[in-house]
Length: 113
Image 1 (tube, rainbow, N blue to C red):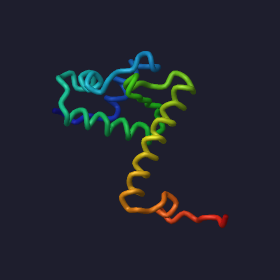
Image 2: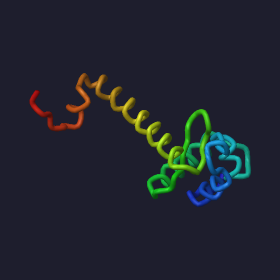
Image 3: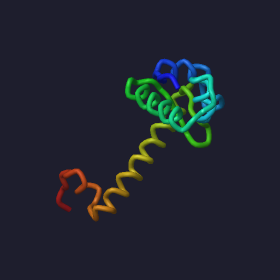
């Protein structure tokens, strides 16, 4: 498998504008690599997607639609809400395992009640 670049992933995603044109990770990986998808290649594509998002690209995803470039503000907002929900779920799990409240987890200042 050759190295998967974020530019390769962005080029493939440019053919998937809007939620209706979303694509699953296996198909997106096949488009990027022009070969059968493998778990390693899929991880590399997901990593490239993280890089693209950190660079400000509006790469959206949802289990019901797959990956795509936002066509509307509403699509971008939906993805941001989905990512926020996933992040909060992870933080809640960490807090529970450590038996700490979410504010205590990172030393947030609490206001007296």
